[in-house]
Every structure is written in structure tokens, then in C-alpha cells.
Length: 359
Image (cartoon, rainbow, N blue to C red; front, side, top):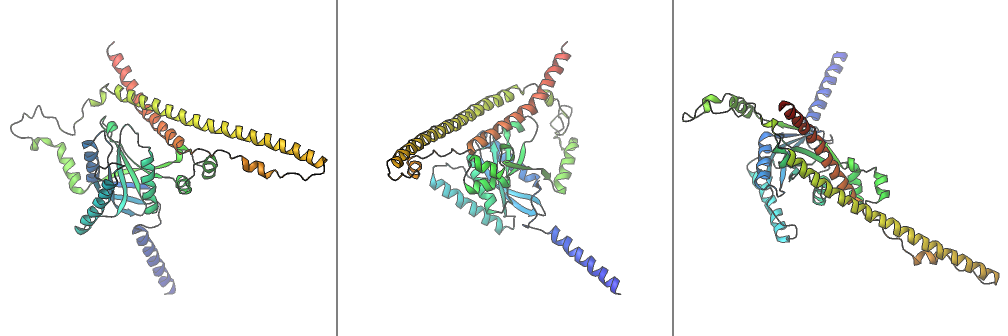
């Protein structure tokens, strides 16, 4: 009886632990992936394409369940100018009103992050840094930013990526210092500013059934159309064999060159600071040497020596410039290089294939 009773108690405890883990909503489990409803994906794509190439943003709503950030709804932010305080206030009021309306109709209204559109992967900006930092500070690292690149999606591959800041970057941003000492202390480089989370798209059973029915398109074709000329929306096509990716690569190269020039300017600024520090240190050493000679002569004549601390107070070393811009530009250069590497290979393959077919 005791053994069976202990076994039953153990099973019940394990069952309670499993239930608690499964219902760990807004708990301590770190985020490992992002799950987005198909309708939310369509809303984000529609909003971003309507205002392309202008950047747009919006709010993500959902729940964090056992390490999976489930995004179940979203709504766009109204366009506003960064220097117009009235429009910023109206935007904040709009968000509050939207959250209240969603709550009244029993729709998920828990904020889990935000989304932003971008052009050719140019999303590493100070605005994104500030906004995402505020989100992660407010929601205890339980929020992400989803970046949708409309220009890349037009080539047949949906570009939807989820990012959050690494703990090293959060610590450096909290200190507000991006000096060389701070970067070494937090082990922060351009490669670990962001942490990318995998995204999975989830559809309801009704949507899945609709997608399967689209393949059987004959029963939905109007009688006024010729069935032989109508192509199934899910049928294979030859769009992937198009050789029109060259403008995309050319634009990437232009952006890459601009980023390299900006990085060169940042390096020149840092080099100028180093030269300024060397000059000031040389002046300090010269002044200290003169003071030592003066003290030696004073001691020889029986006078008291002068303090050397006054020399150090007379000179002030220039402050080290922030390395944040250099980090962001380097991270952006890394994104451009990855995009070029991704698209150059298939493009060259298509060109060689087309050349062989023409022989």
C-alpha cells in the first residue's frame, strides 16, 4: 500500500509539473522560436507592400507559451514624423485605443513585439535599436522585432525574420557606453548584436483545407473562362529561371559601397581620436619632465618641490567616440554580403546554364 501510494503521489506530482510547464505563460522559459498565424503574415505583407518603399511599423499581439512566442494578431501603426510631437502623441493614443478595442471583443491584446518593413535588408538603424531596446526592457526580453523585406520577397522567397537583442548588447545599451573597454567587457561584436529566432507559420484547419482546395481549381473557374488557358495558382512555373536578378544585385552592391564609405569615415574618426590622445599624452610627458627638472633645481637651492598633480589637471584627454555606429555599420555590411552571397550563386548558375543551352 505504501509503495503504491508513493507511486501514485509521484505520478501526480510529475503530472502537475508537466501541466505547469505546458502552461508557462509569460514564465521564465527563454524564447526559442516564433510561431505566426498565416493571417498575421498576410496582414504584415499587405501593410508593407502598400507603402513600399517607405518603411512602416506595426504592433504584434499574442502570447509567450513555454518558450514559443505565438503571434496571433497585429495592427499597423499610423505614419508619423519623428520631429512632430503631436503626431507621436496621436500615435501613442491610437495604440491604446486599438488595445482597448481588441480587449473588448476578446481578441489577444498582449504585446509581444513589433514589425518593420525594410528595403534590401537595410534595417540596422538607431531607430530600431531604440525601439527594440524599450520593448525588451518593458517585457523582460519576451519580445521580438519581425523584419519583412519586400524587395527580396518579390523574387519568390518570403523574407520574414525575427530578431531580438543579445544579453551582451542589452548590458552595453543599459550602461550607455560603447567604448572599447565596454565592448571588451561585454564581449560584444557586430556578429552578436542580434539573435535570430526561427519562424514557423501556423494555419488553422480551415485555411489548410482551403489551400488544398486551390490545387483542385477546375471547380472554381467561372464558366466564362477557358479552362485550358487558366493556370492553377499552385502549379509550377518557370519564374525561377528568370535572369532578372542583376538589378537586385547591383542595388545591393551600391548599398554595400555606401556602407563601406560610412565605415571608413567612422574609422577615420576613431584614428583622429587616437592621434589626439597621443598628442595630449606627449604634452603631459613634456610638462612632467619640465616639472621634474624644476623640482631638481629647487631642491638643489633648498626650496620645496612643486607637486606634479597640478600638471595632470592642466590637461584633459579627449573622450573616446562611441563605437555604436561602427558596430551597426559593420553589421549592416555583413547583411549585404550575405545577401550577395545568397543571390550571386544562383544567378551565376542560371547564366552558365543559359549560355550552355545557347551553344
